[in-house]
Structure formats: structure tokens, C-alpha cells
Image 1 (tube, one colour):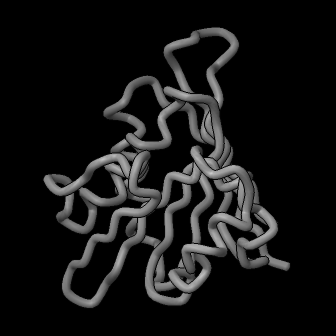
Image 2 (cartoon, rainbow, N blue to C red):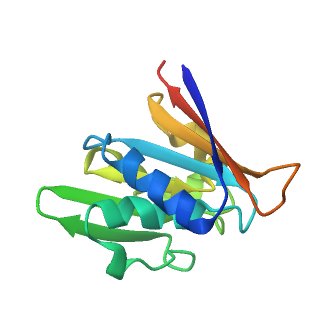
Length: 144
């Protein structure tokens, strides 16, 4: 497991960092985003999508569970599982079938942790204790 911390001082910082992060992504990569409401998870996703030229298409999947984006040879699936009770609901909609179809970005992924493949990237978003407008992104590459 590898760890990396990034301190974001603005939404723009978060998006720019996510663009750089996206340049390293491979197909079928799974990214689990965790953190309080308003901590930057969706802004991070916007940054990833902008790297792939999809910044004008983003919308929050809060009510649809998943938004699908396609660009040439890449599929990106943006999940927001906040409204799910547990992983059984994700399983019932066939959510785990997406894991091998493209890059999966999962907000509130801890809700479905038992279904997430062992190898994934987990990013925890938290507010900086010294400046509540700053965010700390703790990135873990989990390889089991």
C-alpha cells in the first residue's frame, strides 16, 4: 500500500490535482472517494473528467446512482452511492459489473466496501484543521 497526501487550497487546486492524477489512470481502475459532504469529492471527479475532455458533461449522479461517460477508447463511470442502504442494493442494480468496463469513480464507496475489488485507489477528503477552507486528500493505493 502506498500513501500520498495532497493539500488543496481551493476547488481549482483540487481539480488541477485530479487532472494530473487522471493522467496516470489505466482502464478498469477503481477510485473510491470518501469524506464529508462538501469536502471536494465531486470537484475531484470534475478534474478527472476534464483531463479526458468531458468537463462539460458532468452532473452529479446523486439521484441516478451512476453517470456514464465515453471518450474514444475509455469509459468512465461516476457513482454516488450515498443514498444506498448497503452493498446489496448496489449488487441488485448490477453495479459490480461496471468494475471491468472502464474507470470507476465511487463517491461514498465505504457504503459498498465489501463489493469493491481488492486492488483499488482510496482517497479520503478531510478539512485542514488549521484552515477549514483547505482540504487534505489522503491517497492510498491498495493492493492486496
